[in-house]
Image (cartoon, rainbow, N blue to C red):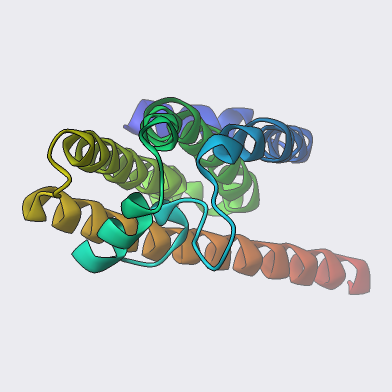
Length: 186
């Protein structure tokens, strides 16, 4: 972990952070959105359960029951492949930003810059369990409570980490701007 953290601290730059953001946004807008179309339904339903903050068995059943078998197969594929790759992209992007913004504090913060990969891990756990739930639903038209709880808790942890990481990036920007202004005034 220390080597990986040091790698990101050493290699991060404003250019790499911007480049990773462009790759992230390009993938989001050109791939992820397109891959979610085959299981999208009109109305108030979310495109994916992973975009909500927590969900219960009722929401899962409601989500799956309005979709055809083909749509559910697309949703399984989406979770296992496309959304899992998306997780890696935002994990790397956030890690580059944290590493760049907090590089001056790396000796005190150590592996702090790898926090986004915890978000990736919980997103993968959520995706796997949503795929298992969906596959089981196709076979039995029921969902398993354990998988739905694991998916929901993983989802909530993912979003909590996401909010924390985004807040830390904003704080890092503010600290950088304050440092820049302070240097200009001296």
